[in-house]
Image 1 (cartoon, rainbow, N blue to C red):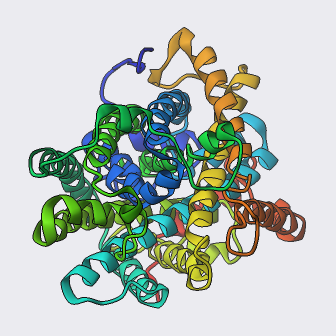
Image 2: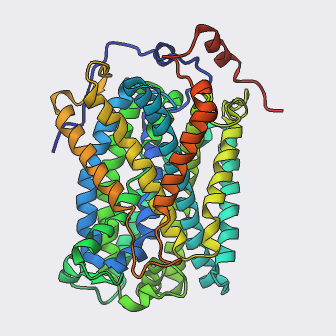
Image 3: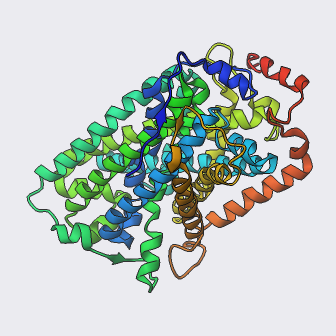
Length: 508
């Protein structure tokens, strides 16, 4: 389709020297290799999380045809976005990632707003991942012990999962890297086991005409075109989080190449694995209406139950839940590094507190705690509204996806400022970049639109309000304190840089 970049190898690469060149004193520990960097983005994308948790949404908004062909289309477009972002990541391999790129290529305001959008998207993604894992865990508890998956029970499970992920991340990046490496193989094996079981065990399957051609509109919108477009959310939400490779670049060896490759490879392999998973699930649907109205609360669990029986359903649910736990753990790592980096540059309230790094583990521990706390607060409306989870996933898409495109756009607009890194697209960089930017503008507008009609408190899409809210907060904080406190190395005085060497002070 297009080249995945080429790397020049002039010799041994000094990652810390590159980071100092970009203006930062190294305080995080480089314990992650190339595979580990790929693994974190692959784990955050997690087809066993995104595809599974929004499968019920897909059954209503377009049905099988939109889920399958929407996956193909969105995956292709995200490959363009991922490749464009990877090229800029190679030039600026820092934990700040997107906002630092925007800052260097466009100026402080671009960096400021990109950072807030990225932060909103990362926290929304974490909330969506872990709440989805809680929903599937609730389904397993229902099958095993008859516990009803009420909003209160699911919320309690969700909070326990957040605590687990915070604890694992406090042990350091080496444990995170090991878990992510296991996660890659768990995801591949999990997809293979699920699809094989759903192919071999059931005596009946849906015809290919159903899987690839059945259109279902359960939204009450009269326009099939509109339904097809909003149905793309399943795929677009799943294809978020691959900026994790960039956020972990300060803890990755040979980051200029490894982080860029990690992004592209994670998107490519997820595209393939997700297609196989969605096709396998859809062929195995026994009762479409029964799947939608499953007492477990999650339609894929009903597919497992109808096709394999109780024991088989519980075993496959366990496979999915473990994959989702891997996914959420990786997202905590990525989001906390964004909090750390944004605080390091003075962008958050109480920045001096959140940027501290524990001297023994080399982990931004306070940033980890803040990350899971905000994710919990974002998800609290799910106690009162069935539409809240859909809103959280839309928040993730319209928060983080524009943040992906801004550095690519600025790289195209300000060519004189951009210096290619060791991984680059060569002459393909410009057409791939403009394709990526155009797609991101389209999906950002699309996922601000209502998903169901009539529009009321239950069906209202709260994602635009969250977007307006975070941009409003960013504007107010810029006026109150940000323009004085937010300063990246390009604008920082020499005296201010000395503070970076003191950030590894032990947490009291």
